[in-house]
Image (cartoon, rainbow, N blue to C red; front, side, top):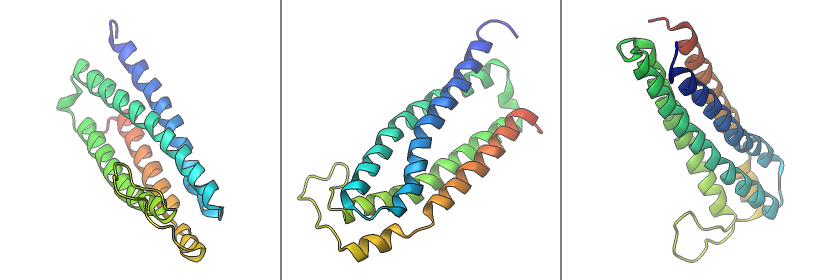
Length: 163
């Protein structure tokens, strides 16, 4: 394989590392935040997670564009494995976004922080007991399972190209 293709694949792999770096920060916060009880520390961790999400989306966008470009360059869109990979990726994105977003928005609201784009007055913080009840969740495990299993399937599809 010559020409531009090796550079596109290199970009695809590099973007995967950008994605993992940004998403890793958010994943660690998801597990760490459950042990916190101080609202200011929880808010700081949520802010750290939000900063990591920016790199996550940049990495994901470059990853997807470079993957599609590599697929077009090698004519793989006539094979099922690439479509299955795209389907799995979309399923992961939808599942993780729906599980994580609602939870972290409700957590910010419980801390008295306005939701993104909210123009009204900040919400009233909940009691410490309500906050602890909200923090006591297994969402990090569910999100990690979805992400890791989905990633393993995508990697297998890309490497094995079974169909």
